[in-house]
Image (cartoon, rainbow, N blue to C red):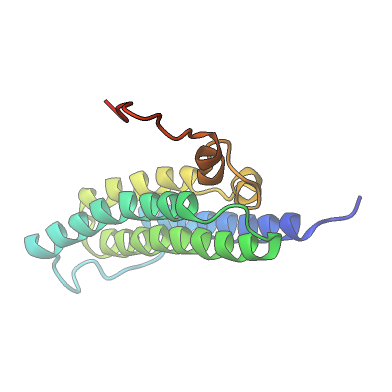
Length: 168
């Protein structure tokens, strides 16, 4: 069976996804078990830094997921397969690397401070990774016209008759 360009892109994105997930999970476990020696008292994490780190985490999670979803929904349909693949690849990587960066920030802050807020933030971010897996269906939907596409809606709308009220 011949592999299509779409299959290659999804396979490549899944490699990046699983690579990031395995790398960050492995690093987190090594830091958690203290297998990697980090100088814990090299700097003290202030309350201000802790609050900003938590705020960044709380903003980054929904922002990355929502940005991906909104841009995918607002993309013009149907697209050429090459153009759809390029757009999906860009959006998928943006979502993945945003979540990865914030996860890495929390792992490093946990390693230096041993603050449980960073521990639980990292756990939550690793769970968020489950919602970031690249999907063949999402990519395929970019190159097809959606069921409620604008062009279909425009064709089915009728013009009002004289004296008829439009809308409610």
